[in-house]
Amino acid sequence: MGKKEIVTHSSEETIELGRQVGAQLKPPLLVLLFGELGAGKTTLTKGIVSALGAAEEDQVTSPTFTLVHKYEQGSVVYHVDLYRVGDFQDLETLGLEDFLTEQAILIIEWPEKLAIRTDWPKLRINLKHESEDSRRISIDDDEVLLDPMEGNAASSRHRPII
Ligand code: ADP
Ligand code: MG
View 1 (cartoon, rainbow, N blue to C red):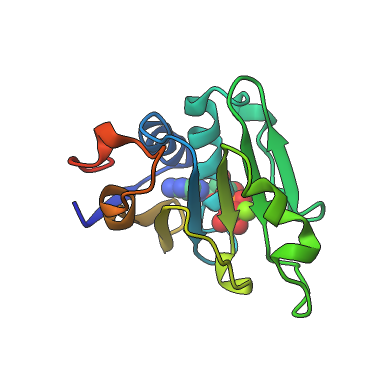
View 2: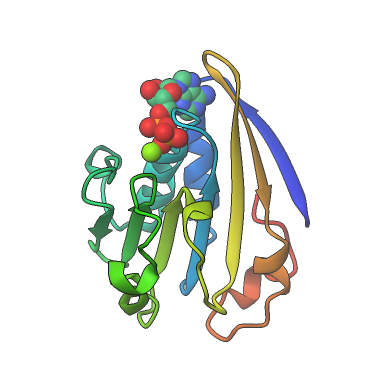
């Protein structure tokens, strides 16, 4: 439990890590992806979304301009990129609050751009450039494991995400 650090050496490895993580997630859940531009947040999301069965890997693209993509082939996953969100905006004006009423998995790139008020369990993932093709990815699954929220994966509560 706690923090896991993995270094991936290609985008394919990052997608594979995303698949391993995604295979163990149950809604409702907020997945917060921290890291600079190009750190691999969207790449990781491809794996998470495909493992959840919500879309094919190739269908997962950056929601930089639209802010939100919804993948709903089977389970429902919202993929949000707050990079371009204005300072004056909040979750309410973006309509993200409505997503939080659904049994969904909400993946957020640049979560530090907005105050997100919810009691949903959170999985925090940090991505860092190590070199051109290497990324250090740390996954902090404490809250997911400890949060007693109903509906969250009871089966995953006592073991680490990966
Ligand atoms: P972000 O969403 O964080 O801005 P992206 O996932 O869109 O980042 O982009 C990451 C870029 O880095 C892609 O062009 C990808 O091919 C490249 N890349 C190289 N090595 C890796 C790796 N190990 N993990 C993830 N992406 C990598
Ligand atoms: Mg991105």
